[in-house]
Image 1 (tube, rainbow, N blue to C red):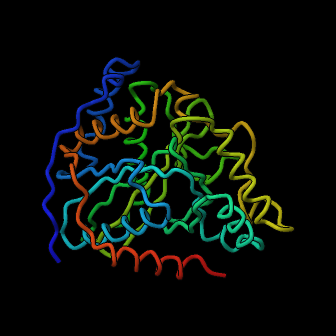
Image 2 (cartoon, rainbow, N blue to C red):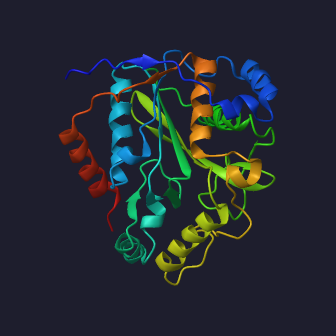
Length: 302
């Protein structure tokens, strides 16, 4: 199967980044984070308007790229957004009224899918930046904490032109809770997960940049209120409480999702000599469609 050799360019850092607070922190963090990432990482950041309606498409794209990286292709960072979607975890899908809650959202124009990487419900829209780093693992090493920590370094490093207060640690009451929640002043703006294949793996994160963290929290809570039936929050699904979520706009004054994406690119260029792709790696659409169907059949079932 041939793969088109795309053109490359070095990313231009956003001017807002260069003038924002905390720029000097980036240099210090760069020295501390050196050696965290392999060389040769490619960056693909498709425009929002090119994203297919089905939220399974970027998920299947990453699954297929993970296979390619496991077969020897260069690692890649995938940065993407979706206009309106909800991804849920496999435990969420087993809630008593999950199918009805998912159907209700779909009738409202929301694309809904079960996320392969695990975790819990995450609302997505154009203000939420998704970033996945797909890396080879030929020796099949398992370094979960180290991998989470370097993803935290990336997320916090990209935010460093605006804030040096990013912290890692679970935020109780936030949606999709985990030990490596990333927060500012006790309010979560990012969650991190992993997905492993035989010879490669995906480090993936959602980052709430624009808009209201509370509005996203409300959407997640509404899903659980509908899907949970008679079950109570706790072991069955996370309790999602007010005052736990925020956007980087609210918490640090990050001006836009585009500015944060530019900072992500610049951070990875600084730390791994990465290069931004002008064109997407060529993947056969028929195989992507088939993989999307297979993922839906495997994970979105009663």
